[in-house]
Length: 468
Image (cartoon, rainbow, N blue to C red; front, top):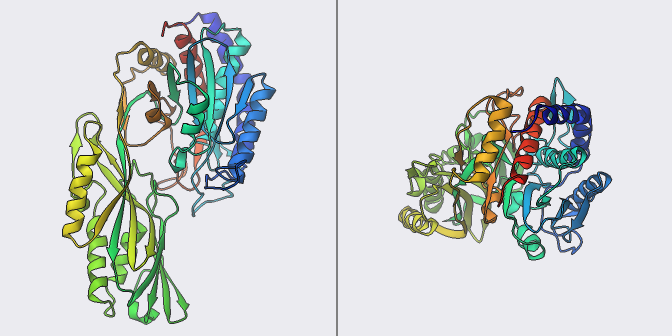
C-alpha cells in the first residue's frame, strides 16, 4: 500500500501526537454542546454548540488549515485545492449526559489508557482523529490531488438540521466518510421512521407524563403525575426501580430503566414500560386509562416491531428495531415518540401504513413525524476497496462490510459511508450499560484511537491516488 519509509513516518507522527490528540479531545469534551433549538441567529443550536465550534476551528487554524464557519450550523477545515473533494464528516454536538455517571461527563479524564467523557466516542474524539489525519498528510508533504475537507456539524444528534445549511454553501463531495460507526466499513444504513403514538386518556388519575431526553435513545427515566393516589395504593414495589414524591392532590411516580441507542436497543429497559406496569395495578384508573395502560404495554412489549405491527427483517440489514425515547402528555393524550430503524430493502411509507392500522386497532393513533430513507452502497467500488485495504493492513484482518441501524451523516450525502473508528474487540472497562456512546461513563481507548488514526491516514493517502 505504501513504502516502509512512509509507514515509519506515519507511526512516528502518531506517537509524537498521541498526547496532543488526547488534550485536544478534552478541550472539546469539556464544552457541553447538546444541540438545542435557539432563536439566536449566531447560535442556531445553542450556546454550547457555538462555543465548541469556535474551539474546534481555533484548533484547525493553529494547524495551518483554512477554515470556514457556516453561521454556526457547521464548520470545516481544508487541505488542498483540487476541483473534486473528499470529505470527513464529523460532528461536535452530543446527546444529553443522562444519569449514572461516575464522574463529571464534561470534565474529561484519562485513566488506565482510556478517556472518559460525553463525546469521546461519539463524535468529538473521532472528529479530532480525523483532523490529525489531515495534519499528518500535510506534515508528511503529501501532494493533495483533491480538496480534503473535515466537516464539523452541530446538530447530528437532533435531526441533522445543520446539513441543509452546509450544503447550500458547499458542493457535494465526490466521496466522503464519517468516523461515526464501527470498522471495517458500513455500506448501508437502515431507514428511520419517527412516529408518535397518541393514546387518549381522560385525566381522572394520570394528569401528566414526562419521560426521556432524546428520541434516539431508549427512555431511561419516566415520571407520571397521579391524582387521587397515595403511596400506599402502590403496594409493595421495588425502590431501586421506582421512587415516589408526594404532591398536592396525589403523587409523582418515577421509574428508571436502562438506556441504549435506538439502533441497538437489545438489552435495554424502557422506563415508560416499567412505569406503566406499576400504574396498571391501581384500582382508581378509569376505563380510558386502563386501555392506555394496555396500549403502552403492547407498543413496548418488544424492540423488533411486534408491538407496532411491523415485525420484519431482510438479509442485508437484519431485523427492524423500535424504541420509545421521549414521553409527554398534551390535551389528554399520552404521547410516546418512537424511533424506528427499518431494513434497507423496505419502504418507510409502506411500513407506516401497517403501523397506523395496527395502532388504530388497539385504540390509539399513529402520527408520522419523519421518514429518512435507507442508504446502501456497493462494496466493490474503488473507494470501499481502498478503505478496506487500509483496515486490513493495520489490523491484519480481512474486513467484511456491514450495515447498521444507526443514522449517520452518510445518509445525507450522495456517495458516503460510515467508517470506524470503533473496533468490535475493544474492551469495555465500564461493564454492561455503561461506557459506550450515548451511555453513562462514555469512554474510548487511546490505543484504539491511535490505530484508527493510522487507518484513516492510510485511507486518505490511498484515496488521493484514485481517479474519482
